[in-house]
Length: 264
Image 1 (tube, rainbow, N blue to C red):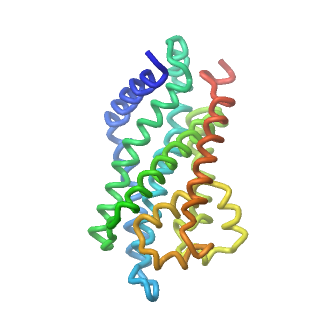
Image 2 (cartoon, rainbow, N blue to C red):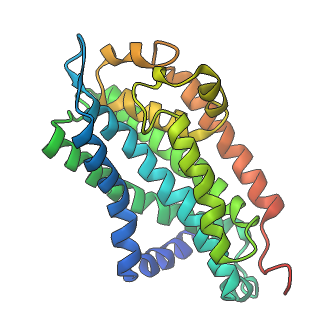
Image 3 (cartoon, rainbow, N blue to C red):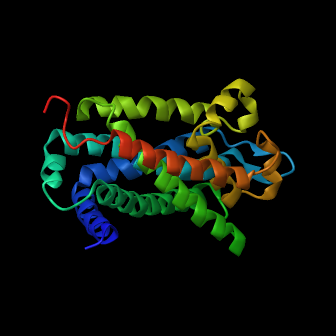
């Protein structure tokens, strides 16, 4: 079997394990929806001359934030747990290479993230009248932003798991940067132009800003571009930054990934 085939087979196993853990499924999907409902209900002002409300902006951003939580945060914890309970050590005794293990995790994240994105959009449509992409170009943008988001953040989640010494500490290691970056990347604060320029500059080095900006370009009208820091969607830069993080993330995975704890 090829590395790809082994990775896809591993992805099937990952999916079965994930959806059998009902509590994990419920909380993974419920968190971004809960945040969206709260923020969208509290902040619902309209942006002058656009016909867009703050709750609709939150919906577009939360599609991206949900994907990042499912990939970056969940993988950092689950890989650390696999290392803690000996799963990785057992897998090391099989013909499965590390890249196939990574691919299996990406398959899991892709399926879970797609389901989560659909739920967020449905809630946004029902409660806040969010419009679905109306043109083929917008759907194409959705696809490539989704793929780059899943791959880049999954690789970074796996890489960050190597920093944590245990599954218990992995949650803190992953959640601290995730939550902080959401605030300075314009997920919880909109429009992003309300943030200090220095904060946004820092956020621009990381994927969160570009993931959420990409999804705002998909679900919001072009009249909302003026509320971005550059006054445009910058889709070329979104693709460049996320593509670069895919490469950097894979390199970090290959350099830092370990099958067992240091104490083993």
